[in-house]
Image (cartoon, rainbow, N blue to C red):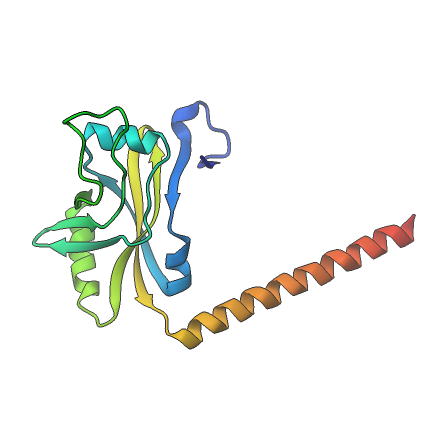
Length: 172
């Protein structure tokens, strides 16, 4: 499980953001316009399964139904020690957002081509959170352009680090 500090000097483990799952494919397939941090309504066995670091956001998406936000197709596997109280792995889960945020999202989602995709699932201060993004799908040529820019950036970084190494070696 990957952990990242949210503050420069975290006093205890409650200030640590514990990453459970990440949707790397979303950044490849979509142009991220805006992000939101949401709480999740979960059952006990779902939380226990998440604490074991088991989840997948690959096929997930969010929708606004009525005046509530819902997360669909996020896979949280059944808890191994759970009995008849276990949950369905791909059930829809309610997202906890402020009314103003939901109203803002409703207005933006009416534009053509915009969708809500989950980017990360993590624990923060003991609570399960999901980061969702308002995104627009990329065309195939946009994806190729992004990969080309990434490769060019990598090559430039390699060239700079090689030049620095040669400079250090020459100074000795």
